[in-house]
Length: 92
Image 1 (tube, rainbow, N blue to C red):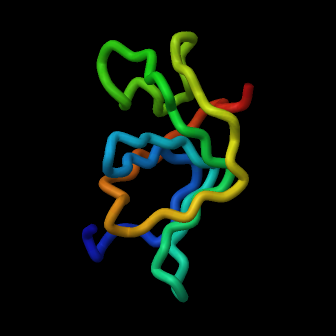
Image 2 (image 1 turned 90 degrees about the vertical axis):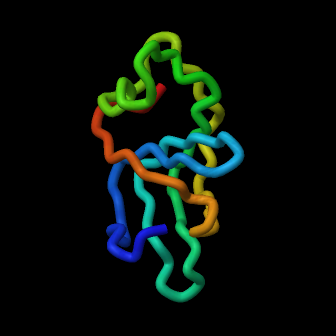
């Protein structure tokens, strides 16, 4: 993980190791524990895209499948591969 990564993101897609991809309303690094905390996180079970994750920056597509919302998700810095800032309506 790069040291110059911002310590906080608004709406974002979090790509984790082992193939996990989450949408979160907010993600921030905890200064005390070093873990990332994502709020209102939803696992993106099926992207529903034909040109990759970048198609989801403005919200899910009709074919996108999301898991139920987890109020908070703690993520190890080593597991966080990259972050895609996004906007749009991710509510159901």
